[in-house]
Length: 118
Image (cartoon, rainbow, N blue to C red; front, side, top):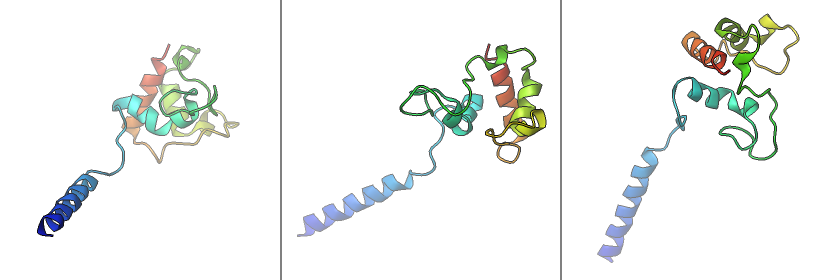
């Protein structure tokens, strides 16, 4: 009886210890790729890519894998777009503004990362 009770206490304590480590999931990578995975991939990743739709080929947003190769798409352009897409294109309807969701440093880091995607 005592052994059974002690075993139960040990199991319960171990379970509580494991649960103590649970919290918000960290992105699998840091830096601009981590920002992308947390804030962009749900709309811009292709089917089967990390953060993207599990089924199907496409996503709601355009593919960003070579977005830096378009004429005029430099880090300044992307930073303005990320902050407030409607300031760049008043017709932008689906892309949300991230000026209140990301820090200026995160916006700059992500913009430079996107500009380098040739």
